[in-house]
Length: 496
Ligand SMILES: Cc1cc2nc3c(=O)[nH]c(=O)nc-3n(C[C@H](O)[C@H](O)[C@H](O)COP(=O)(O)OP(=O)(O)OC[C@H]3O[C@@H](n4cnc5c(N)ncnc54)[C@H](O)[C@@H]3O)c2cc1C
Image (cartoon, rainbow, N blue to C red; front, side, top):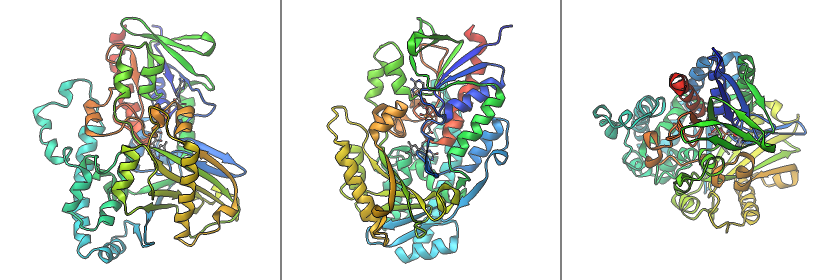
């Protein structure tokens, strides 16, 4: 019997992992990627022996990686050299006071109690709730498929409404554990990874701060891009074929299904299955016939974006830990500006990553490699944002914040700078509205309500990655790939 074939649009984490699963099951799998490098948002920038992770910098949920690498046929430790990062972050508040989030419970207790008497008891209760949300949320909402209405709407799922608090807002829920607003911020800012404000995110997302402390934040030697390199070696071993620098311009469909894709220069590539790893709303808008779905998707909620600065620096800044987060006291105003007004807050919270603290080979000896990330709104419909001006402002905020740590000479030591803005995210990866985390993860866009991994009409067109189920994140894209590959393999016989 002739073997089945699949064409995958995009070599992001989801695309590569799905390709490995499919090829390992005998499906002739080709990946077309518009860029010259694999990895998608898990991207890298290399210059003059400075190495930057351009997207993800935090390896969270290590055992999800472990399970997914096992499912791909290779134990993670054979591919990656991992170290735990503890303290995970150093949080710096507006008055210069600090909180190191650490799994050393005595140290955490001392720090929390110095901010608010009794806070450690609150933390322990919050951590316990986070454990429940993580355990139940991962099993019932993330690590499973939602193929039909009855997959979510069953009597046995009703207790979920109480078990993981999907209807309670995350920030409001914090009053049960802490009075101090800085502590409420310290254990909710992780919602921004979902592209959400804690003022709108479900309290379910306490699973993130829980996991960061319980399971740890990790770092692979060579940075997050080494995950892409590891996956690419598995893909090549499995026989996956890659076409880089190859943009898919259209998905060929008839009334019932997808037939293949059209590449640049009108070249057709036919396949039994088409799997889109490119951002789902972009696929509906640019690659499929217009049927009203793209407009509906464009009206959904999108995650925020970021302005990122990548600096090769001629001296080391040893006082900067691997992950430093400046958390603004006007926490709610920050999110209101980013999400409500699609702007840059007046006093933005921002994040600095110094990878050479974890792996000295990320910078030349005696120098430093620094990344600064400033969350901002996604691209507006009417294009009224002045990104050049916003980037200048964001840059000044980074230097101002660093000065509060006594770092006042950074600007003079920058050898080169690369900047990515929402416009860059849109252009480089075709991310709708330049949203770094794709469709947002509010309640109306989660689980069964998130656009499914299969197109509702074209039965052999599937989706994998951040804007489909389960959602954003590197480990999540690996889960998404396993779920969709399983579904394709289940449904392949009936696809004819
Ligand atoms: C700034 C930033 C920070 C992040 N931080 C973290 C973090 O610390 N930890 C974490 O776990 N996650 C983080 N994430 C999220 C994580 O990077 C993403 O959720 C994940 O990498 C998305 O993978 P994906 O499978 O959806 O594919 P994508 O990365 O979206 O890749 C899709 C691929 O499709 C390609 N493509 C698009 N259109 C076409 C076309 N027409 N033809 C051919 N190819 C096409 C794109 O070029 C791209 O390579 C971060 C993301 C960003 C942007």
